[in-house]
Length: 387
Ligand code: NZQ
Ligand code: ZN
Image 1 (cartoon, rainbow, N blue to C red):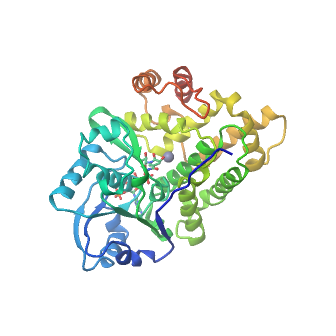
Image 2 (cartoon, rainbow, N blue to C red):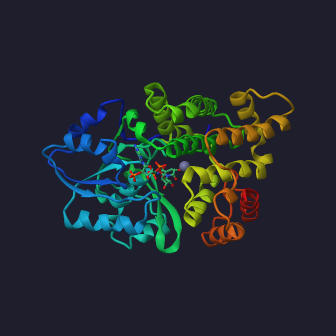
Image 3 (cartoon, rainbow, N blue to C red):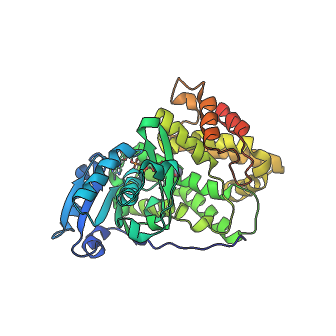
């Protein structure tokens, strides 16, 4: 097992009715920026619950953080934080609102050019230099409610870039599984697949001796396979909703990544597809992931074999099992309503591989993956296979 440090200061408050604790979690006397998205919180009653549990606090609202949150939008909130002397930010929303709030938190006291936070991938480690924030999660998927990363789109250059650092953990996150009842089918499907691929990024590498990490990762995959198709049909069911929500958090709160190698190239390529074509994040992963496993078959064969045996109970030769494990993964994505080809989303795909390779070259991303063997040639092959 590799050496590791495990630091996760987020106070995670899980369960039905937990939004009631809000007033005890926000620092007393704080002037709050309440940040949210396009208005789903008004339709499902979450806004009302939040406001009712923040009586006595001074609140300034910032609405309109879009899916795949944009730097340009978030800078408007940064101006409000500065002008109004905001001392706490509350994100109420899915991954986009929470990631957006992480950026607002980091950029508000940042002394340099804020776009460099993304372009230079600045890591924030000093709590005194960021604005503290908490979250009320409304969409299980990303794990951002309990991790310290964020992904932001720069509209001007059509780039989707990440940043983070230990000061970017939420102070608290309220995770009430009943909030998923109002989610559209598409977003429920996205949540299951995003979390599933988060586990695969940290699990489908090469055999190592992090036995416990593997078993925890496998149990998250099994739980998502069990509840995923059902929760889409019946999001009011508390057993399904709570297991779905907790699986998503556990998939990317840092725990299963400790002491083991990880990949993340599926996400890096997928982010480009969202930046270029606006495809939902999870759907880009369903397009890229299986082709990446095919192109990197020899590197990942040992782990594909373990995955095939333990998750899908496959039998046969090693090569047969490893190959079939990829097919089963695609089958699961189809069950979850994913299209798995780029041409299902855009007719304008032919230059995509060259474009992505050029961008990665400019950023010097020439050796991705757990073995740093995903070269630009391999990226091209993976993207072309995804057409
Ligand atoms: O904006 P509103 O009106 O709130 O509507 C949202 C949005 O249209 C809606 N929604 C959210 N909760 C709802 C709801 N509708 C009804 N009922 C509810 N309870 O859902 C739509 C999508 O929301 P969004 O926040 O964009 O989805 P998600 O949580 O999947 O977040 C995706 C973003 O997270 C990033 C992605 O790249 C993408 O930008 N990621 C962040 C990660 C991280 N910070 O660790 C890791 C991930 O890999 C991912 O990259
Ligand atoms: Zn993801």
